[in-house]
Amino acid sequence: MSEKSQKLLSLAQQLRLYKPPDSLDNPTRRQNGIPQSAKPKTAAVLICIFEGYDGDLRVILTERSSRLSSHSGEVSLPGGKREEGDADDVETALREATEEIGLDPSLVDVVTVDQKMFSVDRKVFSVDQLS
Image (cartoon, rainbow, N blue to C red):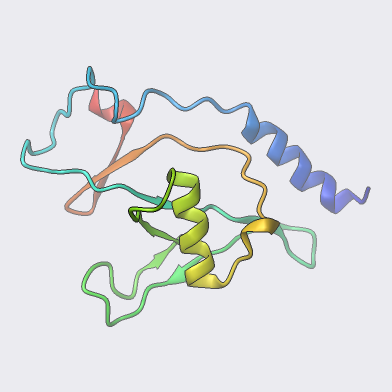
């Protein structure tokens, strides 16, 4: 195995050890600082890490269309809202990555699922900040 693939394997092994904290779905969590009227919508993104030709690890980013009503022109990770047929966040992220960048889901090795985040008025809160 080449040194390049060892870098990616090593990172994947480290990420597999990650254990996210309690999620927003946990009813015992308080939503401090977040308006009670805020209704979370489920969405997911894919952090696609790959090796460039030079052996450096890289992340795929997209630029959102300037014609979109929200977050137009912003740089983002591939992803979007959960649809009715999506089984979970992983399926949502993979479906969106296929739609947005043409990524073949069979080529993806999902190594971890990160903690849920909550966004209100473009401010992002990790689950830890909500306790």
